[in-house]
Length: 221
Image (cartoon, rainbow, N blue to C red):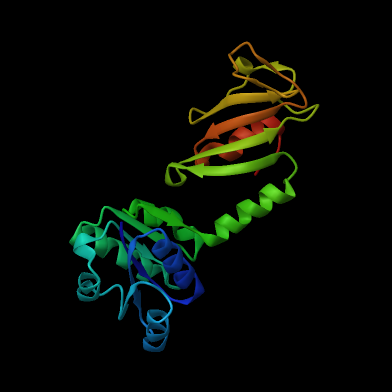
């Protein structure tokens, strides 16, 4: 696999080292000349000094043959530009961008970035999983963030407890995919009753996740 990584700092170094250990052909594009020189001595990769959002620099980095371009700069506008140029000008099949401001995550996806990830969002999800946030655990984004799978604890007295699944008006973009009860896994049907103490496997779109939690537990994410 041929990978181009645009960025700076330790994350760039660690990724380059990881990719090289897997046998990938790695090219790094770094704006700072001193850092570029230092990394060229530390990693098994071609290191170019330049602006990764410059089409000429990307072409020199081998964008026409690249399988993936990863943009990890500190500026969202630069990361978006790198990915758009890579995809539109050089037909790179997969682009990955760091989103520094989580509010920009959806914009990146709408503008064609294959994978846009926010470290802020990732840390928040980890904290939510560890702290529990009471009823919610193991929130996992799939399909580039368009679907989430989560495990939700149903307490005694919750709005959905002691009701059949068909009695719950879940939004169209969500379903209860499984129930964990006393060590068993139940694939629910419409007449399956939910009980306090159940752990529900919820599959949903992110935009309707809060509504699902309110219906099941009375709480919000």
